[in-house]
Length: 61
Image (cartoon, rainbow, N blue to C red; front, side, top):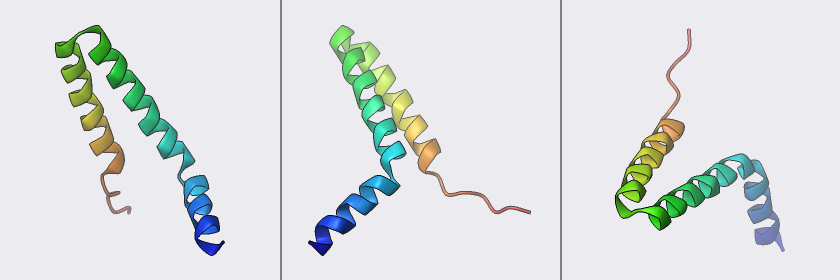
């Protein structure tokens, strides 16, 4: 029971990031469905965006 509660707590805390990831996956799959080269380009752009999102925050003042 405790593991289950911890899992849902983590999911609730990160729901916005999970939804962004799922949206990126949908865009990439749609691009691959249209054209292989377009899919590779979109996958590369999505990886760059994901790296930007996940980069550590710089120190403040």
